[in-house]
Image 1 (cartoon, one colour):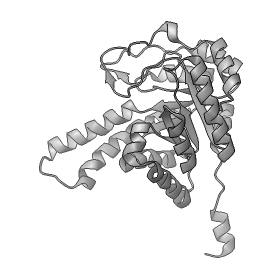
Image 2 (cartoon, one colour):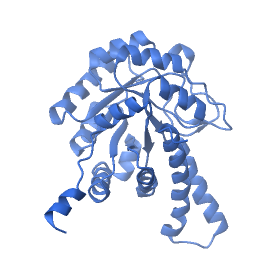
Image 3 (spheres, one colour):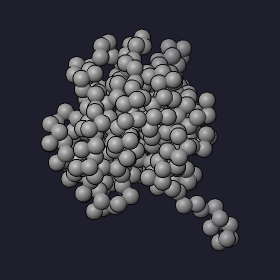
Length: 299
């Protein structure tokens, strides 16, 4: 390949910030999907590539401990170099400055400090410290924080998590003050969403009017955590109201497990992981495809 052709092949990938600005102009949202291993990674990446839309790979503290902080960063870097897709990496739900610093130093595109269970004062102090450190390393790294409690477990639930209630929804006044004092790039409010998903359905309703009010006063992109289980209509309403990123985790975990279980029940003598893991990947990819089409207004 000559130098001209090689240069033409290389495209400069947009930053995550640029992708979010573009999504807001289009009134769509970027899908954020948590993974724990390479199977989840490829289910998300190959689906996003096929649809030609940006996507965020999320890894919580537990997921990072399992897959490896530097290892998942290397996977994203390798995929970018080979395919040049708009794929970004986020350190989801970090509960200390040290875990945020670890992800920043590893080259993540975004980090979340989760101080939702702290007092507002403690949350502000540590969030601001995270923002200042990320800025000092690379101003392109986006820092997110959240206010309002929505539970902590990405699993199938039998009841609404204790502490989650209408009384603990984020108010526009609290959101505005928090964003101004911390300087975060992204803000995750409690607007009826919960982590995990209810067994048999019955997710709490989201509140698009509250989303709209918070977006108006905060003037930064909003993130919806705990998107598993919510209806397509609810998603459309909150995205139209100002949600720019939507997190999905529990639905992926459930699809992964169900795919593996079905294959092993039908093929009890199969012992090759690359064969029985494929069904889990296929089931995850179905979830990712539906959500990405929905969030991007393709459905």
